[in-house]
Length: 207
Image (cartoon, rainbow, N blue to C red; front, side, top):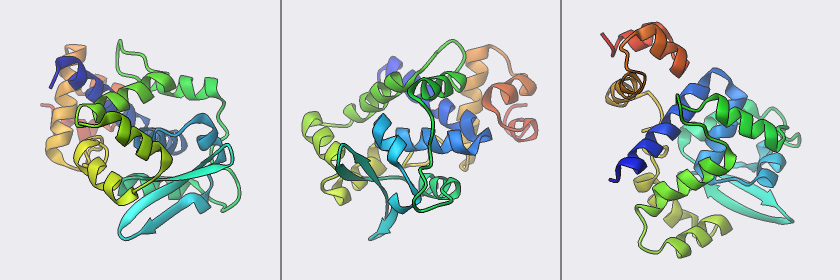
């Protein structure tokens, strides 16, 4: 994999992990990373837009009078469910500027992201696994053939394979080692502050 693409993947992993300290912001970030949701789709999202069918977790995204189904990973599904209290009330009330600031806040050291850069970055990762990029992105954004899209994302999207979470010890070790190399320090306190993960947890992996 190209070195820049590896860095992009690490950046998005960091954004996902470090945002966990604020559940609502974390849910927003997971929704965007999983589905490439537009501003209008984010604004219209409610609890009724969560669903499970044939063991596929998905969200319904609504924009311009149209809707599309998009698969999400299981963890994202339950994080979204946790922040959606009402079936009718909209979940996210962030402005475009606030969404950009949220991504900037959780960006890795010396690498600033906003909504548009995140969208481009996820597409770059998916493109690396695609032979027919235009066809896939069209079907993905239209919400067609959800079973095929879900199978592809489980193979190609790091979030769907658990690589942007810390439940697996090897993933956690690699993540903290990556942060350590980027900041040039193995100080668990510094790594904890940057990743928003408890210092005790960091010390399990960084000695």
